[in-house]
Length: 425
Image (cartoon, rainbow, N blue to C red; front, side, top):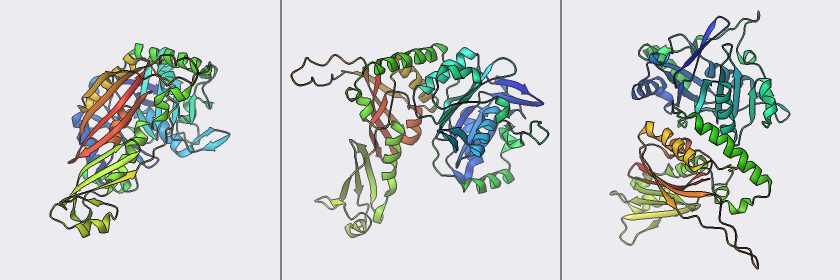
């Protein structure tokens, strides 16, 4: 999907950037430049909102030009500063969707989750394309507010806030647009000057390290979004008719991102007392760690990890602790083909190979003195991937689709691997 440019007032805006989160506060511009090389981009813009940083990428061959301002970045800055009105009052907002008609007749769509653009969260297209994408993302749930033209109010979005596009653009006192230079695309080569790197690094110290990467695939298929909207509406109707959530196993499991974040907190003792962490496994509400002695001493390890259990040889130690992660999902399952296609589209740009297999669906147990429970109306697929050095938190953002869950996360010798399940229609 190529970039789309539009004139608003005297300012030229660009839509459809490829957004990626940055995780090295002291080397923000350096990291952004390295990523630009990896994805073959020659234009870049940096946004810093709500204690996170993201870089937006574009290429001149796709229609973007130096000096054009990122419409998504400008709108997100306004909402980061002003917040949004929902649940009865004006307040900070980190999970929002918006859709607006552009002056040229196309529509602009923007989606932000946890203050980061979703993989497909910066897009311009026809009204039908934008509406399908809006409904598909909305079906995942968890949004604070939906902001957009009043024409969307009839679609029944929860916490809908009717606004005009111009109301989210910064203005001077005389009413003229006043878009600052930070939101303009710059050539990658000239953007990384020493002075900018130092300045950005200073600002970056204020940001949380380890921000998740949110990628977008540039070639979303229109049929996918249509399938998502239709399937979401069908399942909502089924649930309203009396569906039993207890029979839906995905609702009892934590969301992938919540599970990944919890597991990564257990990587806090890599070399306690000189011992070397060899294995970390998170599964079934527990975290298990194994250390090798690495020439150190048992007493040094116990000073750091008092609960560690030493092997009979004295060369290995283990500990096992509860890792409770609440299940907060309210997923509406999508067709299997849609979910699998989306997962592959998001993971392939990072070179992550997904191993997906079919798994038998285990029906819920029959109620006592009643007929056997009906066969579940969903399919089940196994999911596995070797992530190498890619953080599980990053991977979890890529696979955060309805019905996708991780059951096991493992770390061995600096390399991550995951196992999970895909529930789909």
